[in-house]
Structures are given as C-alpha cells and as structure tokens.
Length: 163
Image 1 (cartoon, rainbow, N blue to C red):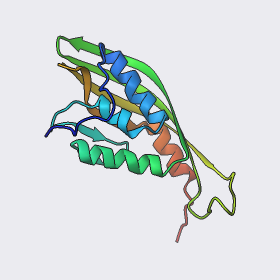
Image 2: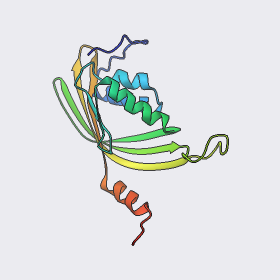
Image 3: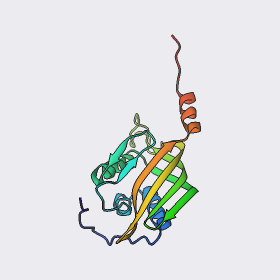
Image 4: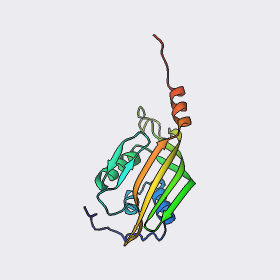
C-alpha cells in the first residue's frame, strides 16, 4: 500500500537519529502529517501503545495518533537513549520516554473552566525500529511499554473499596 501523494516535500532523514528526532518532535507539535512522514512506506508497519493496543498500517496508526492528539491539550516527551544498534539497513533504538500530558477533564467544558487542565506523567520504555530506503531512514515499528513504577503508581492512586 503506497501513501497518498504528500502535500509537502517528504523529509529525507539521513540517519536513524534524525528520523527519531522527527518522530518525537512531530508528537510534541501534534503534527499528524509530519508524524506520518516519519513512517516507512510499507504495509507492515506497527505501533504498539503502552496499553498494548496494536495499530498496523498507515490508516490505523494515523487514527490512533489522531485520537491521542484530540484527547490532550498538550503533550511533552523527553527522550533518553538507553541503547542503540545499527547494521547496514536496520537500526534499533531502545529509549526511555518521560511523558507529560495535559488534558481538559472530561467532566468540564472549556466555557465552564477555560484554564482547567489535568496533568498526567508517565515513563515508558520504547523500542523504535528504523530501516534505510530510497527516502532515507524511516520508522517501521514503535512499541512503548509502561514502566512498572508508573503502573504501580496508577494502582496506588486508584480508590479501593473492600467488601
């Protein structure tokens, strides 16, 4: 499946690091077109979110990220390289993502509380797999997994009722 013709020039990422920078920059800017330009023009691309939901193919990945962008007011990600491996046409990066998401509470509307935002923090470990092709380096797999400390904090924060 080929991508539709781009409305802007397709970036040519000369290194996996450039592609990774483009990926995370497009997320923090909530720029879906720039985000999708980082992905390889392949049918077999996949994005797995920290909740384990799997999106395969351009349409599903675009829909998943549009849902994330529409559900938050602002998203910040600080990326720390943990490990990287590169050989010829493939590069694998294991990173830690410190994620901060600001969103409007569902119970409120902007007209009632225009400045009310909920801040959520999380830490994920993510694996990004890049391949080199005719248009430079492109992302073929992004898999993020919530770190145990984040999961434990969510469980501890939840209200518990004993019967």
